[in-house]
Length: 113
Ligand SMILES: [Zn+2]
Image 1 (cartoon, rainbow, N blue to C red):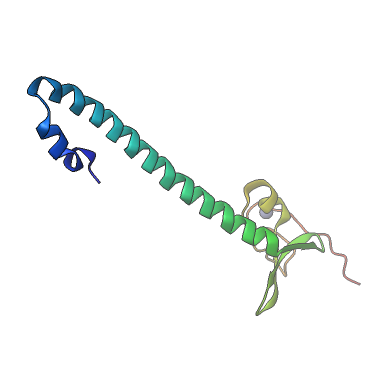
Image 2 (cartoon, helix red, strand yellow):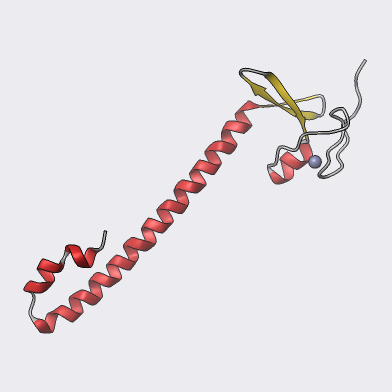
């Protein structure tokens, strides 16, 4: 939407001497509207990111010194590194039979019986 185009009939009805002031004000308002549209788009993206993080957080379970994802169809997925999730919000799968993080080197205690 371009407010100048929308308001052309009104601008054309103004006296020549008033037109410039009105156009300047309309351009200022248009810029504010554009800034608000950009901010709104950014906020929507941030909301979506936070919503996805919250979805993951709601599915996470901490057990045996690691995070696990409760998946409806596959049961539990994991283990994931608790240090990487806690510090960076990343789900990094543990390697070496689910004992070690390839990103930060975290090692899970072996408490198997
Ligand atoms: Zn890690």
